[in-house]
Image (cartoon, rainbow, N blue to C red; front, side):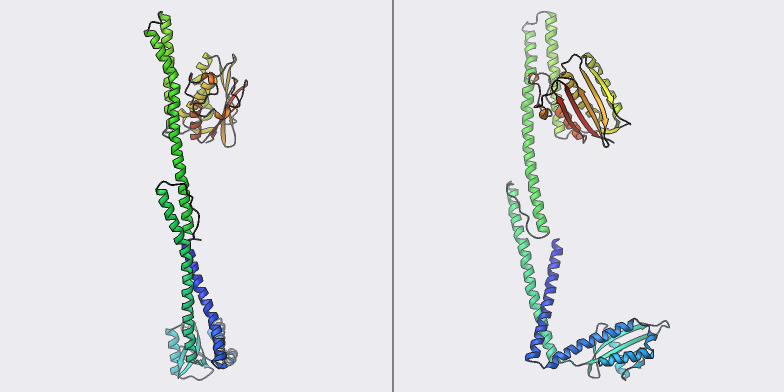
Length: 477
């Protein structure tokens, strides 16, 4: 329950409890007064007042269900006369302030005074007529002719002002005292449920501002205060996580720098060695010099590719790569991909084929250039690790109810089971003999990042000696 609602409820409860205690105290007081001080008639008079008020109220409610003309029927007037006489009361029926029926003769001044007082103070239920106190009730009727009809019920009562004045003072005093006690209790409950937790929250906020995020914040207090504790604790956890992630990012960047520096060292050293060989005259013949220069060039191309991979992965890691998604026909897109790689595969004596198992045209929302980088990285790996004379790579397109599945299957050497959980890690190579020799080790890490940025999934299945199946799942558009 919200704090404001709870506060209102508690105050309303305090008032209701105060009223209930006051009523109980009045009952006990009247009983004690009647027994010890006052005559028995006092309580009887009080009962009489309640009975009369209830009786004339019932007569009024019954009369309001009737039409005014029915009040003028003799049987009803006889019934009305009997009922008011049983209460010691009287009834007067008027039309345009003219008396049509009365169980007792009242003078015109008293009748007019009764009408005026009841008009000016509709909530009034007693009035003074000719030195006597009357309890009254009034029912009004609007006639179709435009006239006004009135049923006036008057019951004389005896009030012992001394007793009732004392009873009134006692009632008001007891109510005020009980209300103050209940209000003090409500204030105490709320101070304990609000002030103490807020003081603890203030101390926790000071610790957080000083960089101490180790202390948890307990959920305590009432309503919004408890919610504030929960929110501040959530903020503390998120802040702690952000600091941890920042430290992790810093460590990752250091790892990237150290790893790429290590991987760059081998090709750069090779380039330096071949150039020094040319300068020192080791490559004396034109053929030898051309070989040295071609090797140095290939190593320079490798270094450039490694630097490109590093820059791309860093931008992907920091979400700095803009994507341009467009609705694309899946089968047509992969036909283009196969065409792009067919020549280099034929040159490597590897068969590359597209197999579509789609039952109808499937569209996906992709960045065409970024996804081509994913396919290129996978196909390059498949070609690089193909050690069979009859090498084959198949791109198979399938679909489920909500997704498009791209499977790139080769019959190469396969990946050992121990290496499968790590192949998407940065700088990881399943073949240690190739380390630092033919790539940055970021190809599959880049592929995974791009696929996940497409809200897709990428995973691998492989068996040594049988080949590898690289699977990509994308949402259908």
